Image: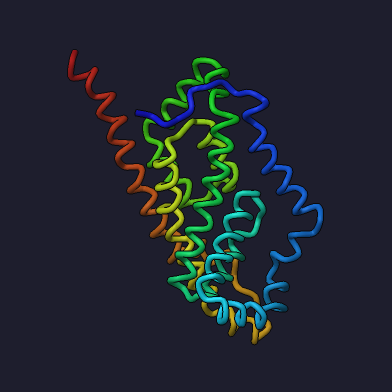
Length: 243
């Protein structure tokens, strides 16, 4: 049984999504992005390291909350936050905390988008309904690929998933597992951030596009699409065999 909300879009249901968008705009307008920079991290590294050392579990929970909140506001800065996670908590715990925070924040956006936008595709006519049905039929595989290879902006994928009315469990699982490779890459890079800061250097934000890193991720994405391709192939073969 689907847990997708069966309703038509309305202004009242768009309030949560609009509130998140407004909060994100206000965060940027009032200068919040100045804290999401490598320079800010470099200037505050001693304070952050001491805070994590004394804060323990509360520091980890606070980081997850901040990551989730900024993701829910669709504020650019996920890469820096993941680098920071690796720097403060190490590559393994840092990656796990980043994954939890990103998944929680993305789920908030998804639920708001699904509440306000679900039903718009059906209003676009038969083609819109076919696209929606096709996406939902293989939702996990499609979303997994979009998370593995972030061709489209993170916030846009969240909105499209809500528009298509995906199941919450499917969305959460595909988001979490799809982000694992990229998150571990940047958390591992963040683990050596202290040495880079001391040397006055910056991390390479495009390292994930190096062939040695990108090609295995593309391979995983191709594997995720194989069941979809096979399903479509079998669907086309059945009419031919019936003739």
